[in-house]
Length: 377
Ligand SMILES: Cc1ncc(COP(=O)(O)O)c(C=O)c1O
Image (cartoon, rainbow, N blue to C red):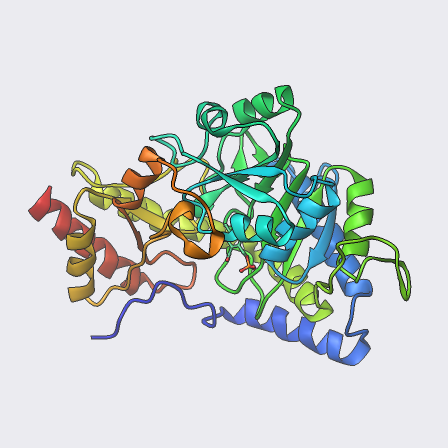
């Protein structure tokens, strides 16, 4: 029995493969191989895309300025640094975010402050942020996990009262919208990863930051290249080498045209699973209206049994994420109770949901979930 994998980014459709091949050939032939026109083009196209509304075929204007960097973790570090968060200050980060924002906070000399999530959304809310808040906090990170467009309106109002910066981590939510607006537009900065399995991915590592304020974007362009404002002059502290490669920028420009279609396919797959579980005690997490289904996450009291059942049907699963921030030794955090995040962590199971799945693979997962729902309820 062939297994149904959790992801298979190398399985490209013919037209997308052709677009990628063309992009690679263009960079090889024309160069440059560091920064240059391909990077500028992708940054501008992605900003236009993020500014677009569902009813406009073309953009209504760029959402802000995009700065391409080496990966999604650096995107967070560069965002924190460009926004000028004071060294040693606290950053509110949800316990279930997987450790990415917390790692970036540590790299930027900031203190992750763990907050719980709301029971229903698995995302932070104004009440959970307020409960975790303490003096010395300078920023709030909202991670749009699993492709869910978290409603940040209330959190945004709350953080403005407290004068905090808002960073939206959109690494799993390219193309997700809430109330017709793309995720990432309320924050001072929104960060993206283009890791191969992301909704918009490349053939290696890449990332980007969207800034609302062009002055922050200008700083970030210096920070991604040693802190240079001028060549060979380290003008800004906190710089690094984290340029997006033009090869990846060209590939991402080519693939941007496919993103909405790929997201629709993800949504259709997760809708099929949702229907299979209807009437049972298990459910697919999230709002079918606003998700771009980066992960299809089953929520069930019997997670380990479901994982074993799917495995016996040859279906791969995973847990996003098995450890809360305060449990990760490398982050050096003190124990804190986040009951909603703990409960959610024990009930979630990610099942295969990616645009390259064959109809047969989707049916195998659906059928396995249906049998589970019928037998276990
Ligand atoms: C939510 C989230 N934030 C940040 C990152 C880090 O991105 P990268 O792996 O490109 O550094 C990831 C992913 O892998 C992620 O899923």
